[in-house]
Length: 447
Image (tube, rainbow, N blue to C red):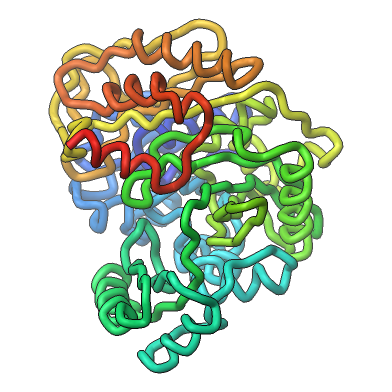
């Protein structure tokens, strides 16, 4: 087991990792920018190192500074959390060259799954169902029209690198192809420095279903069920559920076993999430995230398995602590991402939190790194915290969530709490009757 873990992140995920490490008796090092000197994870860590000024490129994305912090403190492992350097293959390679363990998959696996085209090819080879589309990148309008005609309109043109909805354009007819292709390539080049794009069939009313997987790097893999992340705004997840209200036990087992086998065959090490669009009983691979997800908490709630403990165990060479037969699903869980944003315009709302009170009681968990008097900096993601609610079934979970949202108090900045209070009372959400387009349509009606 590791002696000391450096946490290369900030906010609630840094605090989440710190807690897991402490429970395992491992010393912790917090790195931080000058803007995060008073952050909670910095206060609670055994050691802390300032790695630069507020801009991420000068601090949390500064690989050389983080490696230097490892050498200064004697950290023998780095947990990247999510975002920042979590899916940076170069970072994983550099740590390995310095004999520091990256708590995550190999650089090669990060590279494969970070390239959307190569990821799709790999998924297909591993037996994972994929969306009909081009086998590789597309640059020519004539070729794009030929492929689109074969798979049928509408189609979506996507950036090979990156994500978050950037470099994605829908073409409803052949007349839309030229503009959609040019725009997607331009956006991809600007956002990711890579104008490679590919074409897929555009599904009309899909749900976003993702499967949590774990591999030991030596040919063993398990799945821990699925999460439904269909309530999204601009391709950003807002509300997540485990398990999905749209799947039955047979579908859950089928797609889970496919993913577990794929991870084992790939020789993958650590946590990963295989994401799908789901429509009319069929799953279509979107991408694989080679890291811990923001919404890992609801999987923990229904399985009782600490995913960060498992990441650390696997990375240290201890293997998986569970087999597939050991994993059982209990009840239902929902996570709401509480952001410091205007609940109508979603404009960021940085500032000082004057009062902060979190809900409590059975089945309630809040992952947050803020506190009363904390000043939310304008430089980073606007996430204040995550409200996770667990119940014996979805009905109980929704009732508990409604009560928890009423108890949650954040004063001093605008937050998305009012949005969740509206959603929890909406009949479609209550019935689990929504797709990836539902939330944007709902928000448009309120404007």
